[in-house]
Length: 483
Ligand code: DUC
Ligand code: ZN
Ligand code: ZN
Ligand code: ZN
Image (tube, rainbow, N blue to C red):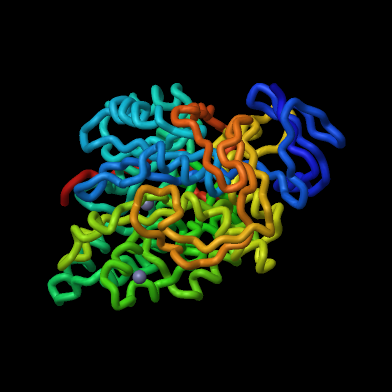
């Protein structure tokens, strides 16, 4: 059984051209004019693009005394509804737990996925077992390791652990990721705010100012440079962090920044809403910022100093958010976005002229596949690539509403926002998962995507490096110790 997507315009990260796309056995088998197949999908007036890849999700994650409410079934269904055909989730070991045990839990949860997926492995503590397990994890097709510089007393690692893990990544050809906020300072600010009686959700934003992110980003970049590792900075939300990334890239370092669609389109005024629930539902880390920071993120996408757009999809219900009534530090951190990332970025990025269609494909799919090393299996419209495709109708409109979303939670942080540009079809390995608004996902269809280490990007360089390796010095006079 073959399918042909007919009458559309192929849009990739570098080309825009009219062609039909033929699919067989889950892959693209031919691209060209007037193709024939057993089934025809009409793409008249539409763009045929690589399906979105969300490199940053937390599905069914144990966190802050609860579990995030979208699992691999509802999360990937939401993604497909919005044109995303692959997610990369974070496997999270408990303190003292081996990485392979954590991986087993994530393997079990992900059997319900409707689309393909991969994992990043988190390094939440350090020891010989973690050092050993990292090699095995790489052998299982996971070439990225996540480090939290925040969440003190829970997920946070210290600088000695960070350096050790970055060095191990460099050795293994893996890429480290960081959540860059200074967890020590956040803990101090949180205690101070609570002691002064600032208990509402707006205080969450005061407890995590841009400075804690800028400091941690710069620190992680410098430590990665010393360890000889590249670095991927997740959820870059502010100019301070962007500046550190921009500077590193200009120096030739392999550093990538990942703004989220939430930070690009929602600002800190959300935390001052009179409705407690409204504000708490938007509590995430890093918090939403002011419009200057948003401009910085958009400028980064335009200039190429920021490489990808993700969601950090970590959805909690209103009931879960209410754990933090009377103490903002107990509000589970996280917002959803899987279904809305592509339409929101198209509406606020492509339709406004801030980014081109080709740049849209790059930051939602192709750049991600290249950085995470699953290109061109994913992120490409090429013969031989997986038929993970979205047929994008630039004229299709809707108003975002929790009532009609796929996510399992009871609200949407983009509620009421109008988007123009939505999938007509979303295909996951050739199977139609979304057909003109109708959801036809198949639980368990998703497969794990193995990603090899890619040592070529591990040549971090610092041309200012003064001493590269310890050298013995033959000394003539060594003074006697003591006086
Ligand atoms: N930030 C969030 O808001 N939620 C999940 C983890 C994180 O870093
Ligand atoms: Zn994070
Ligand atoms: Zn509200
Ligand atoms: Zn995250």
